Image (cartoon, rainbow, N blue to C red; front, side, top):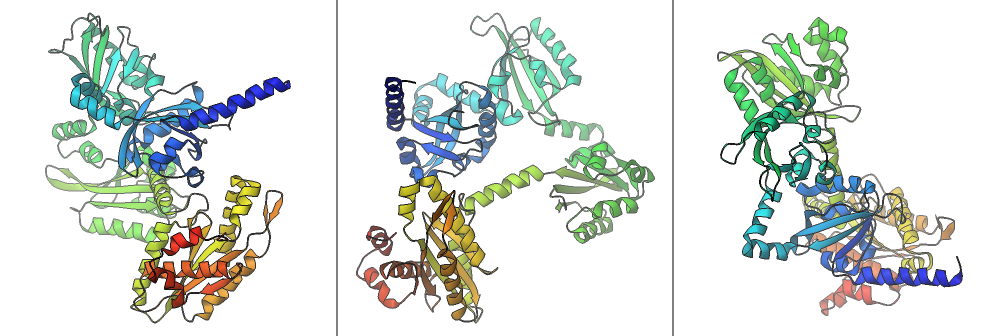
Length: 576
């Protein structure tokens, strides 16, 4: 490429960067795992987070829990599109939940799997529309209704669908459009759908619609969901020109109807257990029935199932569990009380998690046996654990975040009232971290923070807790101290470890640390203890860095004089 063309491209890239940064809409770039790579100034202002603090965190942290599935689904499907379809989701901001329209565009030229998201705040506009415009209110009601609404051509092809299609069945509306509606229905029920469409063709008005009950397929799941579809023929309406089909999940209704038809029967007990894997035993504990999924979930060979020997099954399955004694104790408890219902969670050695539910099987009001049901909730538990971890841990280093550290510190100080032991707080700040960032770049700075976190953890005792408070600041809670010298040894160990150069990429980096130490004292709260350690660290910085200082009351002079120590430390020259 000749020099003029290079200059044109360079000028174009600079102009594009300034343009994106000046847009009133929020713009964010994430990687394939939804971690933030870049955001424009409007995004920083709305979420009150600088781009340096946001890089590397999960963009899913801002999404309302009920909207997570549609966002994750869109993040996957947008990779096969030039531009994704607009979706409306709720985002968490410092001023509360905001309704936003979000559009994703794959940008593989940044890195594989990267997506550029443009987001527009719809909250105020939507409030105005709903207040002033009945048509807009109706559109919003249809989009957010629990029932699925689908427009289908006379030939049975989906033209459009409401947002409930994603929320209830997990399908991307854009990928569904242009496909036969039959693709969303279980194979056994497709003839019933075809018949319903034929019946609707000859007459299905709004006052006399055609209804059909069938099972619809959920994206990514082999288990269909019972649905009732209502078809209205509007093919003669020039504004519609097709069938308007509404549908809703009738799982609960189907269970109730089965219970009424087959009162207290085996099938009712099985369905009421809301289980995937089913085991049925009689009053003596002998196996009377199992379904195939139960055998698959527990890896039971046919030879054991065919024996119908409950003891043999128990011996086989308990070997797979983390706490087999608790499992057997629950079995004995419910067998001793035939009327009892129970619900608990089972953890497997291979990492799986099952929910176990048990209820009595009755015939004509008398207990004749027991139904055990098992549901695999491994993915749900994993997501819950991941979300919980993200809420209380630093996304870059994996250490506890400030909120978790303060909670642990508060609990520790409360425990001191009942013991004779002591605790200490170490406040750490990397020396000259800004120089590393400026010289090697933010990515190298992030790598240094990760290595620093690993080095810090390697110096601690098992009972100590390390946290990243933000930027290049760390803290350590040294609990259960018999004597102050224990924490001094720990502090010296940390200083020694950080005096060794770190290798970041192919570059050796010197990153010593300044440490402030504060011990518990009568009447000192957990917040004060952390601030005392912060002041001591500031004193270590002033006295030459690469050292530690213990908190002394004289260090609080600035606070007494009305000076905020956090502000003073940040503004002081040479803090880094």
